[in-house]
Length: 199
Image (cartoon, rainbow, N blue to C red; front, side, top):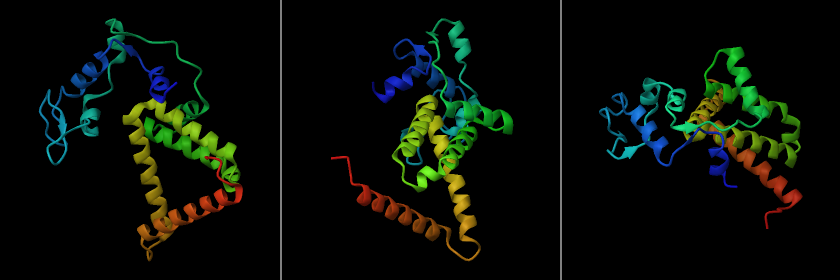
């Protein structure tokens, strides 16, 4: 089963091509405040090429009206599978902290990493697999747009922590580069110590 197949099971099942058409029309009902694309027109990059709908446009358009579309008989919602722990953790974070989905996902995945620090320090393969599975579950459940939002939130958190670590006298970029080099060095040490089973 491909990742797109697994992702498809989490989403409303539209007739062929109907979802793309409906989503595009929904987001394009308003002018994009980022690139000034007119109603009914695609968003554009700075060089004028068509691109994905900008976040400001998606936010202004509001959530997609899946419930309305369901009532119109456009799709049937499949029975949802048991929700994985990482999705439950995200929902709990959103409820407890009053935050949006992207930040809730970030809180859940960071908490998951913190809970597995010992396994990470030991280079335990099972721990790494659990973290991979959690991240993959979020990506498949949220789809490419929300997954990109999650990556943005995590990147901002890493940047803020790096700046705090650097302090007022060090260059955050240099500190981050040093950290990445150290992570790569440790990963290569572990690979050399335990052997590479990829071949």
